[in-house]
View 1 (tube, rainbow, N blue to C red):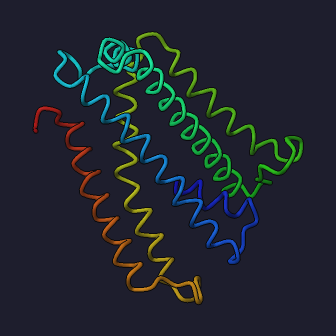
View 2 (cartoon, rainbow, N blue to C red):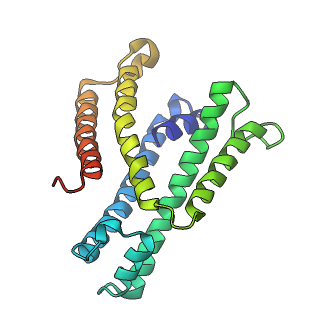
Length: 213
């Protein structure tokens, strides 16, 4: 999402006059996504925890367990809707950020505003990535849970480093000018980065050593 955000800001042609609106938009989206994620984790943890083999459950097994829980069919439908919403956001963000990254690396036309005939590599890289992901999902008996956890662990390793580089840029007066980070912003940012490093580290350890805790 970090790389999607920076590329989308450039693609939209936003300027310093749009910073305030962009902050509000990001805050609203983060809060809403956090609420959905919290609801999904809470529901799953409440009604599936303690079920034999729950650690290896896929989405279909979780859905089956929720159907027979007190939340019933309506709650299960809302749970499924949350999964679809999260999946769509992830698919859009990953596909678009990959396309932008390919365009930037190869110095090719890259913009959602361009028609396909003018930015074919931009659209093609995203389509190929989506198709590859779809093929993996459709492989019979593919260890999707393991693959998902592996991706999360890899992301947890690289995300703190990316955020630290971002903080370095935000504190560079030559780059940011009058918008350089204030002390309270640095304190908040470093607290968030530290929390992410700790939680991501614990998450990675629990995946590699599931019986440690």
